[in-house]
Length: 331
Figure (tube, one colour):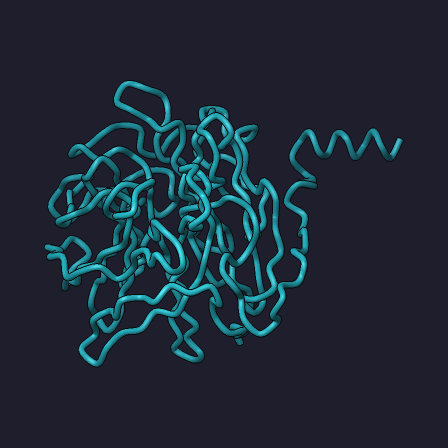
């Protein structure tokens, strides 16, 4: 009888065995993270801090028809990581069939919202940017609105590679784009739709010079830092550049690269996110790159290195390493 009840609970989504923690074996060094920070082919990592724990949500790097789930990874110290398998999969997102890309995680009102791109959507096709919700960071995540949040091509921007940004006034914005175009839109408070921007439109194009994909934004010292990936995702020119503006709507004038390959370490470093330990004012960049030994486009790994600002608030170019970063707890 107990087995029957358990089976029913699993089918109904009340039990998510796949998302249970899977400790990753200790690294050679327990003092530094090493790079990559966890094994497996992963890309497009979005990193966050919830409570006393660091979290990373990457794309599973495989052929499109194999990208039907998202794993998550958690750590108390940036060195020892636990894997949470399939925190989201297409079984709970009926309109998504493949190419689940570039998750973006947000905590709001004691809920966790995981935004994602699905189906490599082109105009007229089913897919786009969706959002799933859960009661804890490890899921299970279920479809929040039963359809895509953004399911059309606007201003030439493919609806992929989304990032959700909370402004200083408490409003949430979604930034996204591929095919060399980037948009910003305001999210409704319930994350089930889009609200009008101050200019009366739903979408505003904010494409900076060199933009390809992988948009990201932070607010620091009352300045808006926009970051993005440029170059080809399988090529040696894949990298991250940035701009600074006084508004989340720009204009954003490209300043320069902050992340790129080092042929002594790895190739194609790009599509990043940031972590900020407010207690120590330490910044980290979490990104993917391709090992020098790999030629398959999907053979990408998630890495972490320090990120620094100079006295003028400009971002210093990141030195990519094999050592990674030193152990550091959130609190």
